[in-house]
Amino acid sequence: MARKDETLKKDIEALLFASGKRMHVDEIAKAARATDLEQVQRLLEELHNKYEQDDSSLYVLNEHPFWRLSIKDQHRKVADQVVSGTELSKSLIETLAMIAYKAPVLQSDIVRIRSTKAYDHIKELEELSYIRSSPKGRSKELHLADKFYEYFDVSKDQLKATMGSFAKIEQVIDRLGEGEANEETAVQETDQGEEPEEQSTSIPAPDQEIIEQTADEAADAPLTESVDKQPSDAEKKEQSLLKSDES
Image (tube, rainbow, N blue to C red):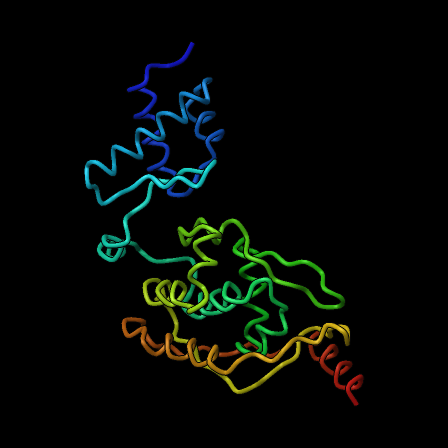
């Protein structure tokens, strides 16, 4: 037997609020112990209309078949004041921003822009499930994972539409970039030996300028010196082999 609309609607609203992330309609129905998917879908649409009509600071985002209760952009800055922080440091966000801008992208491209610290950043971002990688010859190709879209509250279509000017990620860095300031280095390293036919193209200089400018504009971020981790023995060996191949 289908549950009463008003009771179920309140349960669905509570689930979306408590989740803080987008939820599949099947997941919502299961958590709310609802057996009628059509009823759940209809109540989600009613919630969407309700928040629109109430001119609320919140809105119900529909990315079929996913739903999410989120804060409207014009109110997000105020809400961020009470957010205790983010699991991502400023320098980590900058590396993630470049991956998002170019994805799918070879790890070597990111290392050339971000220096050897990108190895640790990429490893951590994979462990946190913001990115995923796939083999590419003797190297690997980086892709955005679902958690990226959930964390930054952006759909794949929205990301494609806005990444041309890098504006979306710049806004994210300005808003969330609290943590250690990033000290850029001039060291340019090569990734774990790509096949000759997979040589990556050069990276336009404006990309690096955008990241450096964004970091400088994060005025509220406490300035602490970051120290790049030296390449591991394995990385040194791979770089040595690559240099031998080139000679």
